[in-house]
Length: 419
Image 1 (cartoon, helix red, strand yellow):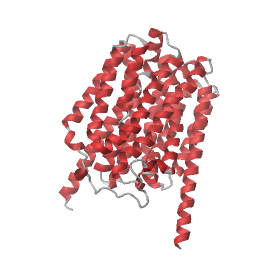
Image 2 (image 1 turned 180 degrees about the vertical axis):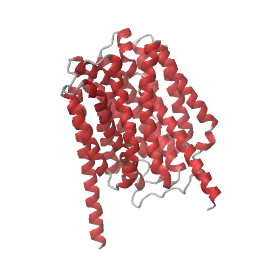
Image 3 (image 1 turned 90 degrees about the horizontal axis):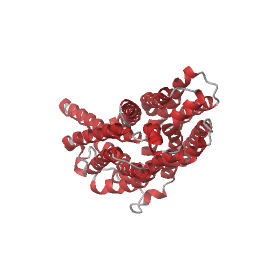
Image 4 (image 1 turned 90 degrees about the vertical axis):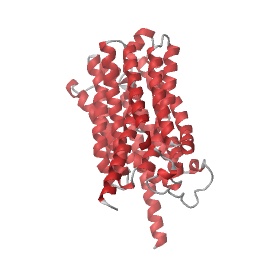
């Protein structure tokens, strides 16, 4: 292959990665369209913590159901039109939020946002796996995860900042403008995201022997279900911080509300930094649990320290960043776990439905989290959710170790049988 062809391939990969990562970051921006506005929405609509949290439960219930279904749509019609539909729907949800005059209006905005959010993991990962060279897939996954975390960080700052400087309705309109701007860019560069079979970078991967069984065969894979459970648990922990970190830090450490809100931003920036390091760690260690377990252990211990209420106030934001760093460090290994343990069994044409189902575990965890922890805050138990974060992180690392050790036993058994 000529040097010119190699350079062209690198440029193509870089643009595909950049566009998909931008779309993913936008979806995460909309994850935080509502939570930073809770102080204003609760005051204007007389909402409890549980009612405010239920808005996010609605968002993620709709997203989780839609994500599992969207995978089949991606495999049938292609990822590009589905990706554009998702971005456009998120932008519309911002307009609906700005126009809301009742709790029912807020629920409608959350529901429409959930529909828009539902398509991103199956569409994103289908595009990356089909359009990016195998040698750069690890980099693609790392950038994809990093921009998601940056989207969370930017969303929390922009939404709270605009609401504080103007009104929460102005913040909702800004979110809508972000969505429409990204949609316009994707439409302009739509040829880069073509994902028909003729546009695959490499020939479609054949399904593994014995994997036949129709479009629902992936539901018989233990690896798929274990990945689903792992994601549910880890994002249940994140849901506590996404929805309630400002309230928790304000009440436990008497931080001013603007400073307490920065706690979530610190977590998200720490997570982004961890994601960068995690990309190198995931590439170095074939056994993903060797990265995931110690990273989540750090997060769990740090969460318990914060829950004790004994940390100096000056260390609250750095400790929040440390929790995020551990979770981010585990992120690329998590994504590699899905590719190695699940998708290889079913081939490239099943990427959409496999990723769609597995990553719907993220939405389930985020949907359940407010229902479990919101009532704790309503009862004045502000440290209990932080203990819950630690418990969930420990459960996730134990699950990762179980999956990893089981995989190694299977490999050892296969090696012995072949000796």
